[in-house]
Length: 447
Image (cartoon, rainbow, N blue to C red; front, side):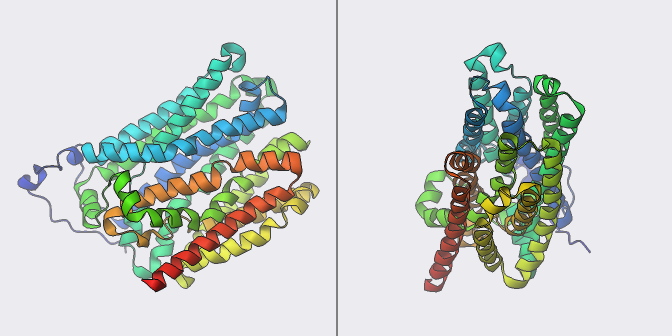
């Protein structure tokens, strides 16, 4: 039976107390069950990941032709991946800026502004003229809107995953931790399915002219739905009370770097293998097939969708494994498996259709098992005061270090030096994870 938390309804003096006013705008009152928080986590993350993958897939299939037609296909894709990385560079800045907005106003104001910025940036990309119509200005606007997406994603942190983890029974922390991570395979499934449908139903000319814009319209609509679903939670007095009880409040970036800088670094590196693998089974192979294979892109997307389904199952299973053996043990074991998998990358991607399919299916399965526990694996290191901001910034830094430049580096290295360098790139991520987890354990023993 779902557990509810009894607030004891606040009296008028409490409602009028300093700092409570902005929070209680649009409140609905009542109780919040953990199941409701879980639904909010899944909806919020799935909408963000759908938006994320719509842009990622378009970076391979659309933008090289629409915004970089003056370059050869490889160079155009590398330019596109450079712009793709801008969001990850901007994301920590968005987190810092929007944490300040939350301290000054409220969670509701921060989340509303962040999701509207995300929706505006996503819809803006859908309406962008091409390079043929606007020249270099089209690339400039694409870059600015991509930066806007990154700032918005950093600002959209709502603390729900941390709240779930902290309110979970001690022996169910892994299960609750994986819920937010389900958004990644769900978002990819929807985005890949939509692009696959458009590719199969439209001519290439129509797809590049107007068809590619529809997924961005859909992403905007989904963000609106997600906005109201999440505001329904964050605008309740009960939600605020639970966050306050766990001291899940923002602190300044300067303070957390000074007081918890070591934990930020360890937290960002602990799941590095998962984040490095993330783009190496989603974005990079799509670009490799697009450039160096005559295989149907729509058919390849179907294989990736099957891989995403495996990843979703893996995410769920990761919760069970982590609760049995521990989250850090799970991450360390999966980092070892990813290191082993890295050695087979050239053989599989050069192994024809069967090898490519095995690479996708095995890679997604490992991704689900590892990524399911990647969020906040060492968040317990943070003092309670810094956990809210620390969880957001470690996620931002993990994306930046592990995933931001993965498609760009992997494609550039493989195109010029061979797929063996992709193996080394993925192996370095696994080694980084193992080193961070080992350092974290050593520090725990010492303390």
